Image (tube, rainbow, N blue to C red; front, side, top):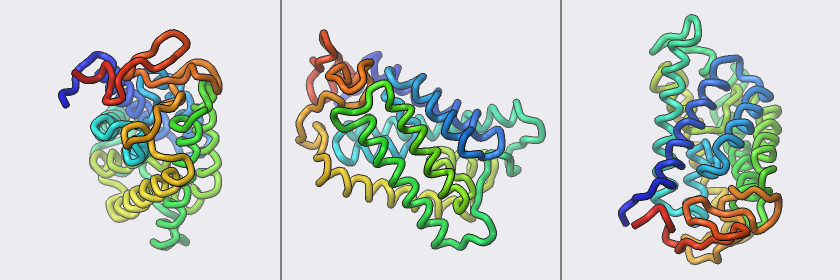
Length: 264
């Protein structure tokens, strides 16, 4: 299918800008769980009604894997999120004293010396799975959490980083952040693949969890839920809708399941 339409373009811009800001704000200072979670929640509110506020390739790819987001859209989101994080890291180089391309910075993270490879992998896997499970409940699965979804996502990230972050070095559970650090700062090279493989395994585990518990989404033959992306304005009501499908009065989806106004 041919991707067209301003709604999809706007959603991609929102994901790019949102991930850029997440990299910029959470990567410019020490990797405290409160700073990282607060930045994610606030930026998710910013992008929520434009794109669903994924801000993380793990979220977009997991949602595509269960049919709650169409595959093309999920892949496009992941690409622009990675590019956004790289752009945010490059902006950091210009705005933060003593940040240079090719030199480790405050944005970098690695496990403490007392943590070995399997322990890092385990904590990163469990924490990412936990975060994705909350994102499904808050954003993708009916009834959703409506405008409280960014708060739920931020709390999930805070909980994961407050405990698991002690063993992962404060990893924000975000492949885009890992890749941006590897590309721009040349850090995480030795550990980066461990983070990425753990996050990829967590995507698979989240898909395996959602399939029997919540069911597949509309792009894999499931019903069209009221809370397709959780981007509506009313908490726990049918006002939740997908901005790319088009909405009628009261938030009822009017577009076709193949992609609505985003396709032609």
